[in-house]
Image (cartoon, rainbow, N blue to C red; front, top):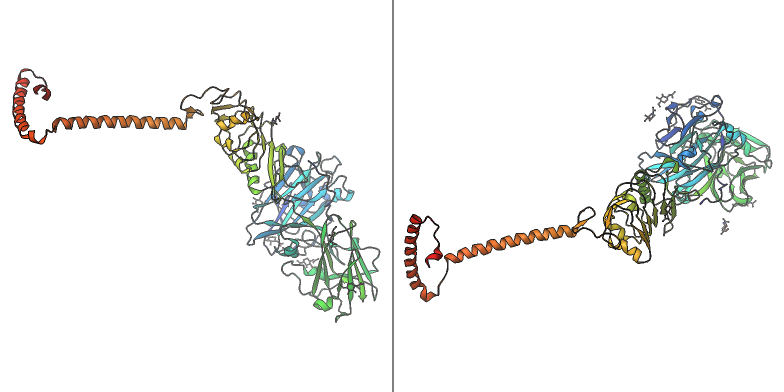
Length: 639
Ligand SMILES: *[C@@H]1O[C@H](CO)[C@@H](O)[C@H](O)[C@H]1NC(C)=O
Ligand SMILES: *[C@@H]1O[C@H](CO)[C@@H](O)[C@H](O)[C@H]1NC(C)=O
Ligand SMILES: *[C@@H]1O[C@H](CO)[C@@H](O)[C@H](O)[C@H]1NC(C)=O
Ligand SMILES: *[C@@H]1O[C@H](CO)[C@@H](O)[C@H](O)[C@H]1NC(C)=O
Ligand SMILES: *[C@@H]1O[C@H](CO)[C@@H](O)[C@H](O)[C@H]1NC(C)=O
Ligand SMILES: *[C@@H]1O[C@H](CO)[C@@H](O)[C@H](O)[C@H]1NC(C)=O
């Protein structure tokens, strides 16, 4: 099901423009960054000495080149990857995490998206981008002219649980539009940055809705040789000042500003070396306006530093900060941190009533002053699929050989405002924390693989329909989840027996007809029909054992010796062995009796005498017989 188009989350665009200066290699405190040049067959190095990796090992899709590559200065801006509808509606980049010594990962992610009529269709596509199963950027056709032509950078900050092995950045196409991406950058940042503990480190993604450096041109990694250890780039504030502002004066200093580049946010010194103020001696006004989506909450960070040498004591520059008309704080920078020192103030803005966020500084004593503004949408992360079920679905994707066009990429269920994987239905788990797979419908899809035993991990599966494919192999014994009520595996080439495990399900419908199944049908399966359900076992190779099917050959089941058969054979062997033992015993006993025949005590001596005589006599007879008859003597004959 498709929810109404989320018109929100059109992030804050940094248009691509180019100020190139000399390069200095930036160092990142967490030692790790990915720069991925989407659509490039080779690794490249740009003007800032950044190495860009070819993206071909990270994803699917196809590659293209913008229509006017010469207008772009960076190699990574000239190539792009697009995901035609033939590769499915959902496609992802999987970026493996490095091994970091921290309990969770926090990353700064920047994308560059460009259309520039690469396909000659003059139709910039509509698509969504998700991170952690949550929609973070939405692109809707028609794009503004400059955006389509020059492209745009957008960025965000997100945390990932350390259990995740890779970050998935997914693209979802609307209608048949192919999503496009030109570059992807990923910087490991401090897990506690941007007040992660109070904004809910793991539950909120900070999407950039404005990062301004006041009184300056755009700067930062990828744009100038200035460093920012998180990879943040800073935009000029001049386009965001409103007419309510008094005449604006930009000021700057070359002196050091203390308190910069420090854990956990590493705000660069350059941010505090420029500022704007007004030309009013007293009570000036500075106002900024940022467009936002009223449905979300925002995290606003304001940066200040007293960089005018004439201000040497508290009370000389005092101003109030109004956020959307609300008096939020009174600021006296010198009183807080003294001169030439960084001071930040942050604030969460809730319950917006318009699509504009206004930040107004009103002088109380002297003119207001500001160095930078950052504004992040607080996007709550959507629930994602239970990890065990993701493993199961990936195994199913491989074993069933699900075709590429079905777009089985990324999380099977998330984000919930997109369709789940084609043919898959999901629902919220009972404890409402994650998504689970409830239904798989892949009838008549030309599947040629087999059913993975990992299907047992889909503990909430209610209905499975794989009918009319060319599936081979056996029905896995993993198919015995309690939740399963409908099973249609009809018209495939499944072989072997029906596993007994199926009996643990709550099946009301079991269609196994038109396969090559054989052997005894589990009694419980047959009873589905008896209890008002539907069952069809017709057209198989050799099923047996329940009414309407032939009886199973004795001791023969599922094409092999049955357990009772084995027991029976075992028992008969044992029986024969015992009989043989008994016979031997009797025989031995008989022979012993022949020799030790005992008489009552009183008669013994008499008998002994007689016996002695008899024996002598018989010895004589024996001798005579052996001489005359050559026959074997018998003791019995002598008595
Ligand atoms: C760029 O870096 C060089 C040295 O690597 C430096 O001289 C120059 O001032 C830097 N430019 C800017 C705009 O910071
Ligand atoms: C690109 O660089 C990565 C990492 O340095 C390396 O593993 C890969 O083999 C390179 N690819 C090509 C095509 O040179
Ligand atoms: C560019 O980076 C490489 C290492 O990645 C380094 O060896 C080289 O010195 C750098 N060049 C410049 C001009 O900074
Ligand atoms: C704004 O709020 C501060 C306290 O945060 C207060 O001292 C100041 O008087 C208020 N300003 C106005 C104009 O109401
Ligand atoms: C925002 O609005 C909700 C109800 O719509 C209210 O409960 C809450 O107190 C408001 N928050 C603020 C900060 O005004
Ligand atoms: C399974 O799918 C096939 C083809 O898609 C359909 O004809 C059949 O009715 C489905 N089975 C059930 C039990 O719904």
